Length: 141
Length: 141
Length: 141
Image 1 (cartoon, each protein chain N blue to C red):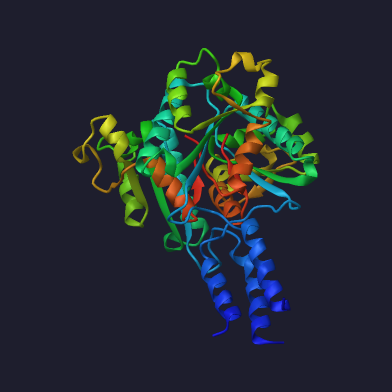
Image 2 (cartoon, rainbow over the protein chains, first blue to last red):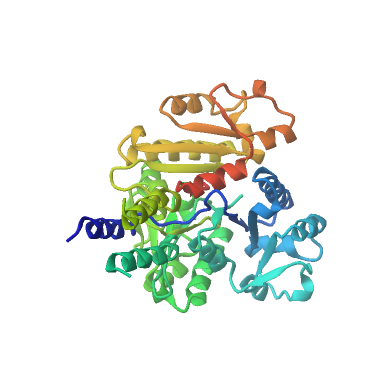
């Protein structure tokens, strides 16, 4: 066996130990934020966090942010939401607001009840899991 | 092209695939959920989340779920828990409910105080850390 | 130097960038804990968690812990904090307490308002994101 080949096998054996994704210096950050409280003060904090994160990494184009609302958190994305204007502003910068359709079914909500900027996911919990599996970092404010 | 070079290219092509702590298409999802609130409404949400996650990924056999209860969350796993029946049902599908023995010691609880389906971990906080270190995704509803 | 060998060295140099979800057996654990509630009972739980985690992994030298306080959680790190003594004790063991300067600006707080053992980060939310990107595990008690 050549030294080179041994090195390759060694490298391969290390692969399961490493793992996990995150941005190299030139890659976009990816952040998924969970909202599960029916609490406008917390929603405001989440929206502040989002804006601060964009500013702190050097601009909205440097970071993908998805805010996943489920359970009691679904209220943040309804038409009568007290933070509707801020959601619309952030959506314009590329932030995605995802409503859990399992929650909506349980609460008998339809898309007509929701803000127009809202995206839909089948289940908030699996959306949060899958994003993490893809290497997004997770925040639960 | 030499064998060595082909191996290198193969190794390089694998990097993006392994660059995340989660399942390829044919692997099980692994989700660890934290319960630290003494709040039956939240417990119900967690149990709904668990059921929804199983359904959404195609069945309980496609996902390992461990629910770690510590601090005030320990009450969910006590004999008088209002969600005892649902816990028993989910335990039958393979969901693991883990009680923090540090919390139990602090609250002078023994295994006699707990539901029979409960598993035990020395410390909830390190259980949550270690599961993440092993590549499980983390949810804090 | 052969091309093959150069490729190997290149591959090796990439490893730190893509790597790191967790410690190998002989590496330090790394845990970042979020505090966003103005709730002394929860602060006490967080400090208990910190102490338990140190004990459970075999000592404070086996684990790096950073506690990031932002939003309403900033109060934990103020001079009148009811848990000031425990913070001072844990800081001596190497635990880092990080205050979010965005929050401080918003609340018109200066470093004179804060405990002397406190460290500062520009934004709590990005600190939590970046630590996770570097492979730290995340806890939100």
